[in-house]
Image (cartoon, rainbow, N blue to C red; front, top):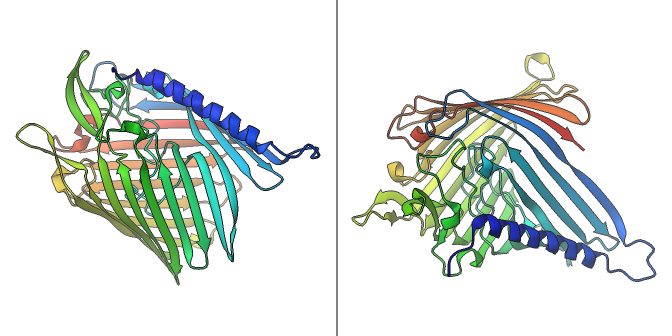
Length: 430
């Protein structure tokens, strides 16, 4: 049976999730007829944004644009009944003039929240589409594997898609235990033919493949235990299921040579830790992953499977009230290492990040961030700077520069070396 068109499939799934949200809202409203109003709390808040990206250089590939403007809208509706049950739904809309694949409608969150107590401990259950975050470092998270990366939002890989899950949390003085059951794997969003941050070959999301016979409906399981031991915060995590990282395999299709995303079944064990020593924070994220593939090709031109370890270690130090002012200055340093070396599937196999964050603590909440990622294997560097400032109670703006420098031909960043950009953004928060 032919695989359905991915755009039609995404539309059907979004419609299904919207219907699921309406059904859950209806269930929350099933109170006794004697109740004059079943709702104890109802809130709507969100952000409307106007955005523009100006690329310093012409694109390497036919069809790429040097300018992209558009807008995005994200709103959250939160509703709670008199017994404390709540439902949260967050739709998202983006229009982008430069890349049609970046224009879309999505549901970021749509979950029912229940909670209660077990003796002196508390429990919480979330059912639906939700996002969680694991990790402590600045550069890129290794342990954070529950939610898929929304890559077309930003190349820093920090924006995430919602994941359909049952998320149970049990917390007490001894720490917190989280258990996850997940399905409906979401492929990573990737640029289209007119978009930037892509390779010479375009990824065809209609041809996505899975190692699991259940494809995107494979049951993924995960767990995480967190606790504090004096000044040390530590998290231990386990994931077993479909990888969130695609292996992009060159394939001849009806439209020519394209990249087909392939998602393996993997198992990942992770640890994240943070030691607080006054103004100094020491941080660590490390993983062992089995079942994934590297970039080394075998005699049949297939990628090889390789178990590997990776870590990010570093820290940050904060100077409060520098120069006898209200200014806070934070200095950050991190080392990122992937055990696969030159065969790693990401561009950060051996890199050092140095960064500063400056907060003026003024009425406009002005903040400035500057980072440099230096490769220890090549001459490649990535510069990222961002200024954010509030204009009023509702309006704020940001200016960001993202620059690739001295990228060599054997570096994974070589195909995006001309995608440096300046971004302007105006936000209206409500």
